[in-house]
Length: 134
Image (cartoon, rainbow, N blue to C red; front, top):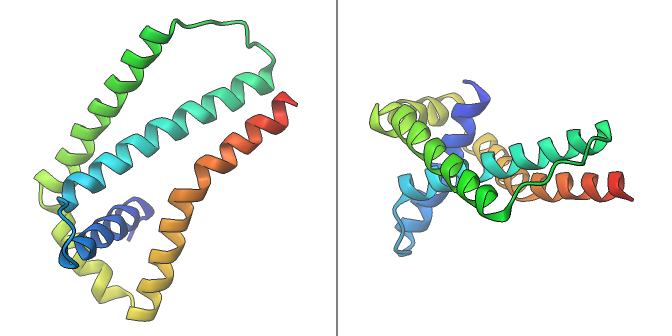
């Protein structure tokens, strides 16, 4: 099972469990929204790190253009992820493969690692930017 399938499956199962506990959420929507936002933020932060490392930080983008581009990237990724994993029904086979391949103890370890990484990685990138900028 590839890492992208594991990430999507773990996040979907996390939101599905929240729904079972009575939260008013839509698991597939939350999963796709979180993944698309996270991917755009990580790509932006990685780009900023690479620009800062190269020393060519003279480019200036107007806030309006940046915001429109940022939101457009999130919307595009939203529909790409939704179409690839949820419209095609791949998430069902991914869940079955995840639950049959890994024991419950291993599933909990993977879930803890993935959810922690989703929360911590953006902060690590921001910390790298802080170290680079001095």
